[in-house]
Structure formats: structure tokens, C-alpha cells
Length: 329
Image (cartoon, rainbow, N blue to C red; front, side):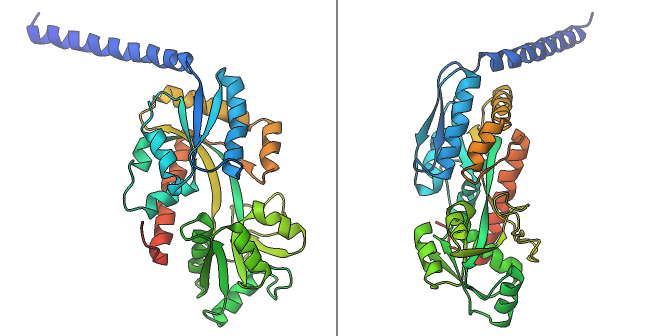
């Protein structure tokens, strides 16, 4: 037998054994996971919608994984501190990041980050979505979004649209409304939701774009009227309010979302195990109800679907930021 033939056969046998051992190792890796307590690093302070979503899911994962899943709040810097913590963590699945559409905004808003959002973070599954709404005072002359857009087109630069701080989801949604409807309005950013609510009640702004949850009390109290919600479908809590697209503003679709991600080099069997448990948790009626009470729709996904959502939102919000002339930080 020629030496080359012998070496070639040995190489093939070695490759086959390596592939076989990897095939055996993958299930074993998933079975050995988790081997210690897990943590979810949350880029928000305790008590907000994102934090509460993480805590609801963490409680379920604690039961299914057989290890404690604790919440670690690291707010500030547009989520950069929290994301960096996870990006640098051991890629063993024991450290997760509460990712959101804000993660996509940060990727477009900052000149440089200490991590690569698409490479150093691996999405596992989405957790939930929550709508934004276009709001007016209850006694506003605008009864529909179409009426508001028609007035804005006929009266350029007359309307003031309030949102919270520049670069927030609400602020970028207001900018998306402006460009999608092709209207000339002033976007007025406020420090936080309470200031925006006060300004809209006090008629300092004509319109507000805000996450539906915090505005729902004002709507139900009769202080505000929702002209449209900005998700793909109507809100379950306001079924009579059309989506912005239904109301005639093509392209005006903007929902907030949360997801869980792990360090980028985490083995796929571990990602799949986490995904399986997250999907099972979010499928429970009692978990859906807990999230619905926060005005969040439970919304699970595959890892690939979550990754596609992140990538598409980075591109979409990057375009909005560029069109609006918002300076990078």
C-alpha cells in the first residue's frame, strides 16, 4: 500500500472519529448544563417593564433548569455596561443579557462600543413585545391619525410631537412617524415619561408618542385618546384602536421588545437548551397572564429569528438616526 494512500485513510478515520466525538459531546454538553447558578444581567433599574419581564422568566427557568437564576441590574450608558458584562463573560450559558430594541439603537447611536453587538452577543429567544401609541389630549380636534396627518401636511411645522429623551425608542418612533407620514413637525424630547404626560395634558405639545403601558392609565381615565398603536397588530387592551399602518401611515411600525442573549461563543447545544426552556416558560398561560398584566405580549422565537430581529432593527434604527440628523455619541 502506498504511503500516501495509508496517510489518506488515516486522515479520513481521524476526521470521522473527531466528528463522532463532537456528535457525542454536544448532547453531553447540554445535559451537563447548568452546573451552577445562572444570572440575567439587566440594563435597567429594578421595577421597570424589562426588569419585571426578566424576573418572571427567571423564576420559571429556576424551576426547569434546577439552578437559581438571579437578576443583576446594571443600568446606565444605554445598556453598554450590562452588555459588556455579558460579552466578556465565560461563554458557558450561565450568564445571560436582557437584550431589547434599545440594544439595536445603541449599536447605531454610539461611534464605538467595547463589544461587537452582532458577534459578541448571541440571541437565544425573544421574550415579549409591547406597543407604542400615538396619543392626543381627549379634547383634541384630531379624532383619527389620518386627520392629524392631513392637518400636518396642510400646515407644515405647526404641530409639536412629544417624546422622551433623544435616542430613546419613543423618540426614534416619533422620528419614524415624521418620515413615514412625510410631514414637517417639531419633535420635542422630554426627560422622562412623567414630563411628557404632563406636557400633553397641559397642551404644551399637540401629540405624544409613548409606550402604551405607562399611557394606559391616562387613556382609561379619559385624559388621552390613542389614535393608533405602532405594532404589527392591534393591542389586546385597546382592540378598537387601529395600527398606524391600518390608519394609513405605511412603514410606521415600531414595537419595543425584550430578548435573552448569551456570550457570542456559547456552544449551540447550550443555546438550544436555554431556548427550549424559555419557550416552554412563555407558553404557560399563567406566565402569559403575568406579562399581559404589564401590557406585554409573550413572544418567543428561535435563536435565529431573534438574531434576525436584532440585525434588522440595527439597520432600521440606524437609518432613522441618520435621517433625523441625531449626532452619534
